[in-house]
Length: 500
Ligand code: ZN
Image (cartoon, rainbow, N blue to C red; front, side, top):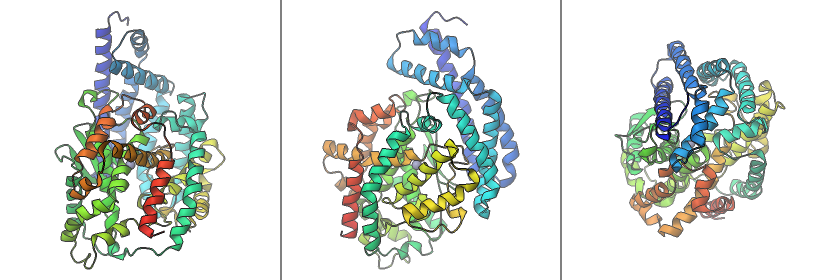
């Protein structure tokens, strides 16, 4: 097809974007259903539906007709939003049209099956069940990396999918800095007296915990008309547009903090998504720009706000009202110390703020080796256990609490984990610039008023959705990324907590 006027060409492009958004919406609802409400035996039919829908999505993006459309638009004077839409379409078109249709569809089916198998393997503590699936997922990802960015090292190409511009060179340096600054701090804390936290592990009935989640969502200012909550094995957030965002959590009867901080973490993701400018809805610019920026928001609310003493002082009366027996003799200060207890542990999602990045480092090193072929999938459990020994000084008793714990690899996300560490490190730098603009924010937090904080993040980050590249968006407000903000923040926080 030949295009001769910009308006028609843009209308065509936006039509495609609308269609793409609709199919992604439908597939997102199916995935949410699969992980939350669907009965166990429902996988087959869903797999077929997913295969058909993915084929349509593939067809929309990889349609050869897009080539003349994009070429035409690339030559026009466009407004900045349209220009960025074309840029992102070009990126997807080039990437996906290099993947043969059959491989793309087979992969989608593989991922759908792998998630059920992973869950079974985790429940049965049986890595060998999942291994053949992971082998195929690694193989596909290696192949896809070559399609995405043939000029890059395969793992760099995968990193780039989650955080444009990120590479192993930068991450090797970043993790080296964290090791250098944090390992001595972790050993000091190991030697110090641990705060009492046994009250967090008393029996906490699930119905009361559900009430607690509702309360936390209220404190975070999440509008329940636009943000739902469901229960899944592994907590996550999914967004369909800025008016429909869903978070999930996982309750544990003997761990109050587990779901509490999942809700606040996923709530942070949701605040970002709900704060995107509606003008980007149903376009390729819709939603958060990158995993790194996303994690900076979730971890900002989870750790910087949610694990601060002023926040705990605000919520504590309600926590006590919900759980009077469990928290008898406990005050807000004790509760604050307990939720900040640090020390090596097995499970990433329950790790404290200080040791968290060590968990990420393990996954980063292992992914790098899986993709470059220097580590075989069958040797993964052993390599995993060795690294936990080396970096965290901890014995891994079984694969359920080891290499089977996360859902990322079964979902095909290789190269995603480093964005968690990067996001954690972005947060304290954002806080420093926020405090420069707003002055003291902690009185607001203690009153339970997060409006100025959310307003500042919304103004500088959320509303822009996918309009700016992540690095540009960050630097516009915070200047060049410097992990010293992060290491200084941790050193100060833990010195206070542990009287070091
Ligand atoms: Zn997250």
